[in-house]
Image (cartoon, rainbow, N blue to C red; front, side):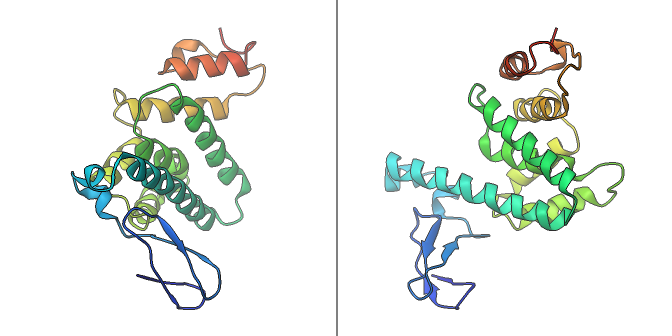
Amino acid sequence: MFDCPSCGEEVEIWTDEIRGVCHNCGRAVFRDGYMSCLEWCKYGQDCVGEEAYDRYMKNRAVGLRRKLLEGIHKHWGGNASQIKFAEQVLSWSEEILKGEKADWHIVIPASILHNISSDNEPEGLQSAKDILLRSGLMSEENEKICRIIEHGPSDNVEYNVVHDAALLARLEPGELVDDGAFRTETGKKLAKMSYSKAVR
């Protein structure tokens, strides 16, 4: 049972659900900050069945994406350029993931938060960690995401996806870039499709 943040009414969210609807005021209530047993129990998929498990994980991914985007909007406030860049990296990462076998729950948070720790944001990494702590991810996942945000390791497929997404987001029409700069085949193909005159 979860309290509705609008009216305080209790909302029931089942094990295989990521959200419920408040019957009193109609607001959608999310399982923010609380893991379902489907996430940590190794028998979760067998318990509810493959269809229900896949539906839950898909909904969880959507909820996680929403929560992290809310986090960067609060962090950067009115800095529209930083927010726009993070959203562009996210968009490119989602495209690259269609062709690369990488962990969605690592790549998407790292894509959204990767630029939060820059030279002019000395406390950025801690801010990213604070946002992740409120996201409901497991500590092992948070550690992997933070390693990518800190720009490593380079032999990690999730890092490579984020690297290529950021490169695509920074690429300007007409700018020359060696396709050897890309770490994934999908990133390279997307660059050639979108910037055919820029990639050689």
